[in-house]
Amino acid sequence: DTEVTQTPKHLVMGMTNKKSLKCEQHMGHRAMYWYKQKAKKPPELMFVYSYEKLSINESVPSRFSPECPNSSLLNLHLHALQPEDSALYLCASSQRVNTEAFFGQGTRLTVV
Amino acid sequence: DAKTTQPPSMDCAEGRAANLPCNHSTISGNEYVYWYRQIHSQGPQYIIHGLKNNETNEMASLIITEDRKSSTLILPHATLRDTAVYYCIVRGYSGGGADGLTFGKGTHLIIQP
Image (cartoon, rainbow over all chains, first blue to last red; front, side, top):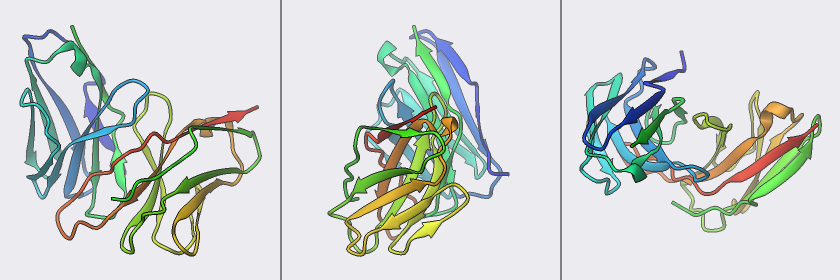
């Protein structure tokens, strides 16, 4: 099983809503990542978790709040987003440093 | 991590070999070269990686020059489904914990029928 599963696939939310994106992997990987991708741009790293601890936060605004409840799950909690936060949000996982990362298919988020 | 330079776009005829170049002249000794691709509206897909030796798997071959300042990804028999943006990424060893991939602009490879 080399799959990273992201839910939901599509999400439309208002600027006052609170929502969560979910990511799950069962490959025993101990590193998990959130990326944001705007249209026609490359993915940009947001957060890195290593052994369930946040190891990298790329100066992401506090309206994005990551959570890693266990080694298989990664959440991204969203609150008070802006329309410019509309993007494809990608989750990835890897076994450890310098090993290949596997990506999910992403959640297409639209903030209205 | 070292920066990479790739052509913004390339065309290749279906059935021919697609050769995608990447320059990484500032690569350091412990940095690996990774290749990923992203088909429209999907998540990036890992293709191959290497340190200094040439590598081959079921998807592609990776040729790294002896000075490691450039590399070429080879798709031996391109199909229409290989149309995608291909990213060359140089990734360093952070000494512990995990780090993330830094994507450049990549090469948009278009396979022509």
